[in-house]
Image (cartoon, rainbow, N blue to C red; front, side, top):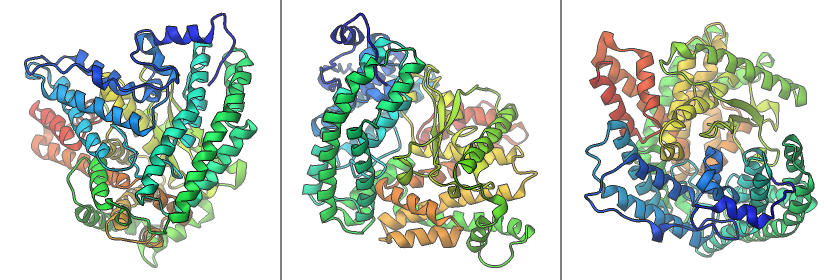
Length: 618
């Protein structure tokens, strides 16, 4: 969010912000510090300070994440004026930094460190090794310690055209004039960032890598809207004006930002549109990675990155089918109890979804009803947390509607933690393009997943760990924990007076089991898009409108959908193991603390944390 007038010149402010932050270039983009990284000898001791240094080496390449965490301050304040360098050279520099720091930590002596700090070094090593394997692939967008690995640099749910407007509207701070200067610097760098993506888009197109035609149709429509909003002044500027007013900063900043948005940014968006249309002319309807060059290799890596396991596509597919059958066996008696006795579980859940008792009103009245419904469930679950944890947090949390331009290609909701310094709240983003996306029996579970005890709750604990642990996240743990949070809500009584709500919870777990089947079906077993949609609708009773967007998401984020249930099943397996070994000494609150205080980690590191908990006697 942009600016306001100040007694300093823009150059003076930016020079002050950049003091101590290495290699901030005038475009506002960070350059990789790879060639300046010192690799200690094998005799060098590992220390927490090394972890801090490694974290800022990473954030130099992804300065938006520094802002998200609230650590773009002091000697690192220059990060607030920068955007990630999305060009091929920028991504190569990022990989070089990871490679240097991975060599660095592998050379360190960690024997004298406490278990938690050793774990942090293990986590960094795992994340960096996996990311470097991704950077070695001939195309795609690698999420370093995050969840959105994508073979397509720009598509319906991937790209700067989506990420930066939302980030600038809701995350970039606007409290004083230097924040506004940093906002302007970021907007001025935005056309270069978009053009960096175009270089990678063109390179992929030239080797035959194009997204499925149905994804490109969505992306083109969304990008046209974003380009038109930029050209007309509807992109960034209205929210900027509101944010400036709220901060009592001068509206003059809008006049400085407007020509950049309406000129260079709109023009760069038009260039991206041209490339998407070129891709569309070459595209087919084949949805899976099997149809792309090097697709089998790419999918194997994406599946490993998502699950933090070495499970093969066939193993994931088989597990999904087994878990789906077990969950449906739990749903069947509940359906019979409420009068739904005929047909498959999927068919009966389809019938339940049309029951008017569980629908929200249409339009804005229904949207308001949904927001109030979520708020009530969050209030209830928050009060239950002392029954499930010894160590409690008090999340800074808000629920917001997704930006309208993002809703067509987005899932029903998503959420995440706030900043490390607490200045940016954790958020649940809810898709309200139509109230028919949601039902009264499935919305409670969705709220628990995204907020408490799910993503926002877990993030509060991760934010207490060393900075690099707050930066690095693992899909199988993040999503596995959120599903485990759904389970805790059920165990704490969320559905004791609302049995149909338990169906929503079980269908949610079954939905994640379906994801394992569908994702591997699309990318490994050569399923069509319609085959994937029908599996959800017929086998699980999912709402067609919801799963069409879901399936499209799996096409653009291969492997990501498999991490959820793999992670949840592992947490549940570790809990059963602890119960078996500890017997009467097992304590649910102590177990939950052991998992969540150990932080977001690969599943093998999670197992080590549980092992220490068991060894301590519970």
